[in-house]
Image (cartoon, rainbow, N blue to C red; front, side, top):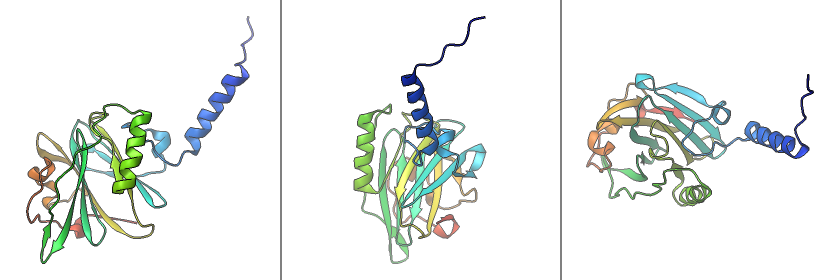
Length: 210
């Protein structure tokens, strides 16, 4: 019986560094793959129809991932007490902001579509970092992984925000959280990537996150 051959020292070092990097990494890589090692500390929330949303606070950044049974596209809605951000993820990513105007929600924004890359790369990582610095959020698109989305957004630590997530299949809202959403976060026109006038948003019914 032959003795087992020991791994060369260089290979052992590389394996150890890789393992330590996985264990110690506090920040998920936005590559469209929800790895357990990256997200094991995240709080899991059940969406409708067996979809899963994860939240992972990290200082002034909130990481969020969505795992779906089927390919889809969708929105993350963020209310900070002043404005509502509509964060769109489909074949590209974009954002709208709605603000109060009297008793109505109003926007003059249009979605500006960016980050259409189909695979993760150093060039995409640099583009994600630039987009995040300029916009305060960034996410993956459904060309990278149609059933899994990863996002991060800047926030004020300790300040509560309201969140909702809605993902569409065949133009209709299929997967959403909280599961009792009944306002225009589920509006088909808005989900398709077109702003709507005077949407009926009710952030008080969205999830409160600190």
